[in-house]
Amino acid sequence: MRAFEVIDGGMLTTVQDLGRFGFQRYGVPTSGALDQFSLRAANRLVGNAEGAACLEMTLVGPRLRFLVPATVSLTGADLGARLDGRPVPLWESIVARPGEVLSFVGPKDGVRAYLAVAGGLDVPEVLGSRSTYTRSRLGGLDGRALRTGDVLSVARDRPVVLGGALRLADRERPVYGHAHRLRVVLGPQDDRFTAEGIGTFFGSSYEVSPQSDRMGCRLTGPAIQHARGADIVSDGTAFGAVQVAGDGVPIVLLADRGTAGGYTKIATVIGPDIPRLAQAAPGDTVTFGAVTLEEAYEAVRQEDRVLASISPPRPATADASRLRKVAAVVAAVAAVPKAG
View 1 (cartoon, rainbow, N blue to C red):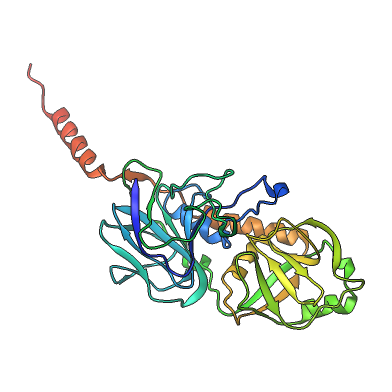
View 2 (view 1 turned 135 degrees about the horizontal axis):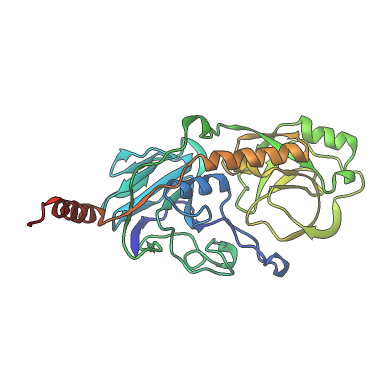
């Protein structure tokens, strides 16, 4: 079912889900949302499975005209969302009416926002995922960012309007700011750095470079000293791996990273902190702190508890009002005393 049309695609708006897995050995990146917490929360708020396809919007949001009634949610960055000129609340479900236009006035906090629509965006699955990887024109909407004239559909044959609004508690909503403290687990090649180099990594403040993108967050700051060179035999790369090449400056690898790399990796950012990096703007500062594996696991469990606090809503189709009227008539007829 056609859900909305694109009036303006914005700076970089793509269809993303939780990623494409099982094909890295063939050189296919996982892709998927950079801020997976926001995507998962957006989907829960409209009654979708956590991994349903959404829109990821970067800095300058799109302009979208709804063609049918739709329950939607916006999470992640505050890009100044407006629905027919009215401010749109974040981290809760709302209903958009046919003809209403969703637009954005500009970033206020964070970089990437996520739009979920009840039913999930319906684009073809490619290698098991609807995520967009623009460098290979893979997945999403023809493997590219949205542009004027596009029409997106949801995987439903009629509109879905939920029975009641859902929201994430205020205390659980992230505030991003411009200084980001990231927890990391050392390794897998921390032995390839001097003690001074590891001290530099943990004791320095780095700045997010304008050259950052969906492949990696490039940082500028003090060089990290290697013990015996930056080159290693190429091995697999993880989401959040902190790679340090010959210049000694760290790059945190993100969703569109290469599947393998031949540079040392000093540490890995834990999963629950990657969303903070995904929301970091050029010029923001980043610092690192070490945690144990058990502390990292507990952070993952806490993130799951927060998401679980968004209870699945009760769906009601667009013709629910008519059904309620029918039910009322049936009840009234049943209450009429029978003759004899």
